[in-house]
Image (cartoon, rainbow, N blue to C red; front, side, top):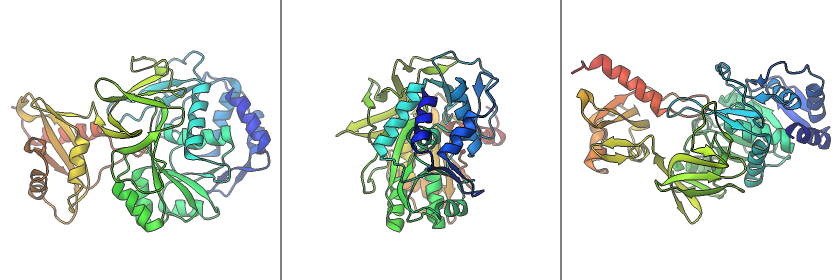
Length: 425
């Protein structure tokens, strides 16, 4: 189904530019891509693992579609998973981002992939006249759905950047009059600070991690570009999109449901997503929260006047002597201190075997800001039990290639550091 749809797209746009590689200057027309895929050697295994932001990534997918092989995109540093090939009708595996634990694989049919691409193109207004600038990973669910599938199923050209670094972005954008730029918050911040957000960017999109309203306003003030917050998940593709033309006022606001996507809340207040783009289930170990066109997220949410507001994750909530708090709520207040450049809040088992969790604030500070300064700031703005008991000052909060900071990973790092400093009771 996908390969036949691609062949029709390639025929319709035969002489139009499909891909322009900013690193090499090589241009590929749709006709050339179609010929290269059709004439390549057959796949010899039951799974294909495209990697990297290159034309070869696209050709690997087309060969797999042609031969009915399951596609499992990987980052450059990832090894192929040791799993059995999933049975039909699965034709695609997505790897979750593992921000709160172990990565898992999600199964998709051809029809589910196409539905996600159709929803994204229709909701965001993507068009062939505005090429997508590929600065994010093609292997991640976000990049695959926003960059690869619109190219292959809708004829929307792709500009390949060799990296998301500011100078590469400037080089990739320079020859084009109109572009769409998907990014993640950390990249949008770096691009703004480097002054490389070009007037040719007609549509800016941010996903992969929460986009702060403050950063959105700063980009709008400096460049006149409204960056649209996009919320999705590997399990179900796009969920919500902020289509408004002015910056948001609330960080938690992720917009309204995508076209053809239905959302509601379960009894615990978590968001439930239904639609034709929801995956078949996890592989090889299925779970009840993903099946039959329904994905029950772990995102606590509120729906007001059709707009979705995220209120944290059930797995991230910190239990302090029976009372629970979302770390994002503490982070939002802490970022209001002028001495905080960035921060991450998480819970760990309290020292000395107390039957509670301790709130830890991991902080990137400015100008000699100290723990006592931040503690006083929070005491005046939060209930005392929500003020972090433990503080960890770091030079920076590392993010993965998918633009996310993992609470689980940072909590593990912190416990390792604490174990070296505090003797066991």
